[in-house]
Length: 264
Image (cartoon, rainbow, N blue to C red; front, side):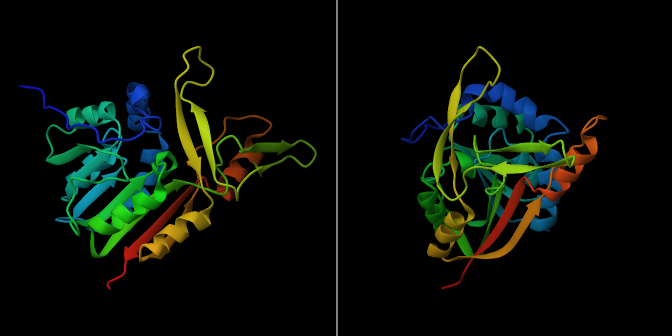
């Protein structure tokens, strides 16, 4: 079978792409114990409800895990990612499903018509989108009236790149989350291979919650749901297990925002 030719990448910065670690990322998402499968998937399926026959765009789709999930539930699915490498993996993994994949930056959805999508979903990808204002404006353009946008985020108040961490107090045997920056937006250089001699970097963008609310409101998207999700993981037996497990249950690592396009 002739290999499908990938579409050209629109003009954009490549520094936020995870394509340089596509093999690692593919293995990570496909791990049955990943956050994608244990935390995001069951909650997202619940929130989406019946999607049979719906036009759904997965924005920042990576290697296509959620595109495949949506297609298996009867949706008409498109996936967009800035990384040609990840789109290639998505195409390979989806060869038995009818899914349209496009290499494109999230802020320039040039191949999607106005009011063409019932739902736009973005799973743990907005932190790698440099121009969030333009992204939200494009989502508004392609959503049908009363269409839905569902954003799954690393919790902006508790997961601040290089400015948040767990802290254990040996005196009262309690663990909590320490955050040293929240309100200030930041561009953070991320090592894709921490602890390794192989250095590959990308960039992540921290934004406080009010920034998301601001751009949603500006684009006539009304928030209809906000949920905070905890980690599914448990610590191994040890002196800190009880404190660590309790801290995980009290500190959400993920946030879900659902917004609907108001009919004008």
